[in-house]
Length: 554
Image (cartoon, rainbow, N blue to C red; front, side, top):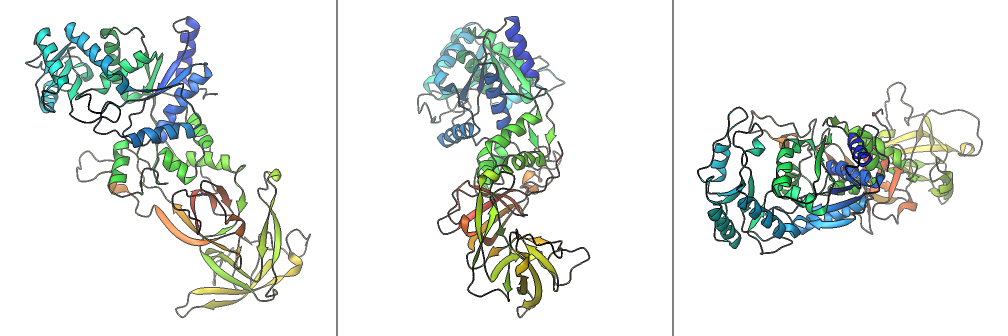
């Protein structure tokens, strides 16, 4: 799998192999199962699986399940599904919890070496003792406990003798280190909680910074790739590898995380949107989750190409969301059948068309892909057009339908508006038009020209459908849009209350048997996906993926 030419990690791996430092490549994708994957995780997936593929290596899928209070089997299942859907398959499937015995033994080793101790300070006291970026930390009064006492207390922690928060195991490193992560970090905490994988076996759980390097080492990972927020943790990663005397010595390399405009990329914030009812669920099409993008109608090919185009660098810039839209638009233009749908119907009666006549007109399924064949469209006396395609008193250069004006109906005839019918409050409810039989599309008619072409659906055969139109869920913001000086204002204050519009319209009859995840290009409206959650046998529901027009330039 070809990677972007700016991929500095590829250069590191290539150099490692050529120098003999490594003779193989093993990467891993290690999500914590505490939420659904989002588009930012897609970058990590593409990088880890893509680089391993390129160097004939392997990629493990590992669930970093060291915090039972936040993890769930639902998230495990969804992560597996998302990785598969994106087009990747793991070589080995692991759970961090499978190594709990080994991690415990390595912690005991640290205690025996005088490199770890049991601390009775509270979490708040530990934070206070740690110091600041400009002031060194202060050693815990329990730091000088004997090896014998620490081994005894740690074993009793494991047996469940202590309540949550009363004791932790800390590394003994350097309380004056300029890197706060090395100021005696916590390695284990007491947590009397049932675990989705190990059940009630454990009541102490390793912290991420202790567990993660050991997991990499146990699995034989060569290149541990993560985002730049873990760069300051790398010295601790290396400390754990060295002091725990692991046979394998993985190396951590960081790359810039992916941020997108009008999007939050924090599982905590996404979970808040779900829990507080701002969205239907993790797979809501407005969410940046992979399941949400899938339900909206994005393709795995478009997401992979988007990630590759953003490149791999140390920087963590913000990408315009229009770039992601661009890639799904490019992918679907040669895949999606073309059709017509009316989102806001206005009835048209062609008064000079025979009342009982129905014509079946031929139209290409996708003009850019002739081999997709043709579809047939019914045409009769009564039609629906878009409300926006008619104006009673139009401005200059308005080329759609208005009284006395003539337009072409796509794939059909010229029609001319002769009369406007209104309801009792003055709303236009029907147009009465005439058609010219000589102007049939494909007949070779070379007479007068018209500037407007409208899409339509035959009223007699129209199939009712629901359309869901989306705007960004978060207004003009990204993860950083929180004022640290204003505790009252959070990212939730930027939630767009107009992010979803649900309207009822009609589709061509050849779409009456659509299936979930079928994708179409509706003339002038853009690309749509059949919603898998709300579509029924009685009515199809279409999610708008993207409009036809793009403002993004590569």
